[in-house]
Every structure is written in C-alpha cells, then in structure tokens.
Image 1 (cartoon, rainbow, N blue to C red):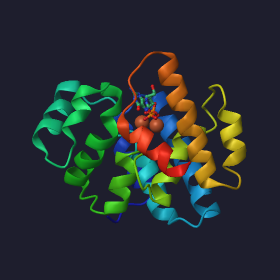
Image 2: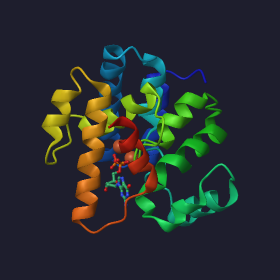
Image 3: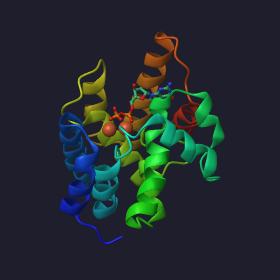
Image 4: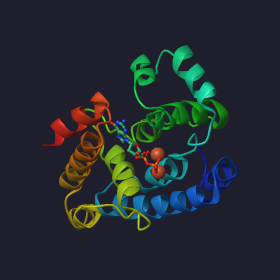
Length: 186
Ligand code: DGI
Ligand code: FE
Ligand code: FE
C-alpha cells in the first residue's frame, strides 16, 4: 500500500467519467482538509477518497458476481439498490488489483455510501468529504458543511439524517447500515 495521491488518482481516472473524476479530486481535497482538522491519518484519508468511487461504473453483473462469490460481502446488498454496491465491491476489487491491503482504507471505501455501525474517524472523514465536497448542491448541504467545521460526529449524523429523510421521501428503501450509522451517532 505504497501509493501516493497522483498514483491513486491516475489509477482511478480511466475507470471514471470525467465529471466523476473531477468529483473524486474534490473529495480527495476535502478528505485531506477534514483529516487534518480531526486528527485522522491524512495519507489514508487521501488514498481512500481517491479510490472511493472506483467501481462506480463497473457492470452490474460483475458487481453482482463479486457479492455472490466473496463471503466478506453481505448478501443482503443484492436486495437493495445497486447504487449501494460500488463501495463494498470497489474496496475488494482494489484490494485484489493493487494490493491495497490496509484494512482501515478498505473499510472507508467500503462504507462511504451507507455508513455503518461503529464507524472509525477515517470512515467518517471519507463519508463526509463525499457528502460536502464543493460540487455538491442538495438541500441541507450547507448546514452539514457548517457542522463539519468543528464536529465530525454531528456533521455525519446530520448528513445521515438528510439521506434517510430524502430516501423515505422518495419511497426508496434504506439500507440497514445507514440506520446503524445514524443511531450510533445520535
Ligand atoms: O457515489 P456518489 O454519487 O459520489 O455518492 P454515494 O456513494 O453517497 O451514492 C449516493 C447515492 O446513494 C444517492 O443516490 C443516495 C443513495 N443512497 C445512499 N444511502 C442509501 C442510498 N440508497 C438507498 N437505497 N439506501 C441507502 O441507504
Ligand atoms: Fe460513491
Ligand atoms: Fe463519491
């Protein structure tokens, strides 16, 4: 796991659309800023953020095969929206492809969409950076940005609350880990 920022971004770039790559660069910058603020390992935050959406455009059938065949991946992912798959599947793909062995980085990539119970501060930094990067513009994001200036847990709790309310408003399912993450922080 000896990759720097440029190597990691260079690795993910061909796997992403341009706009998604630009989002990834902004998440990486934001994750570094948050890691410095909240005393999280900056290099790990940078690497996890650079890689976080790596599997975003992988074919659904490929991701489905990974979920079915790797026993570390929860099978219930298949019962929920495929939008949730790219984190957990991407983390394990990267582990295999680039020998990204660091368990903390794998965890942060894995739970960046849904959160989970007992998130580490590294998990929270990547989750939050993805939510508040400057290109994001959804209702309530400025309030989360304000909280992120001084309280990592409160900022994550608010982001999770917004996501849960948004999903329920659209009558979409909410993955249980999202509730676990929320309950844990409240
Ligand atoms: O990959 P990004 O677009 O950068 O962001 P993301 O990984 O946070 O994915 C966001 C999408 O995932 C957004 O459309 C909302 C959706 N989402 C997040 N949590 C849940 C969820 N969808 C469902 N069904 N259930 C969840 O718990
Ligand atoms: Fe994502
Ligand atoms: Fe993202």
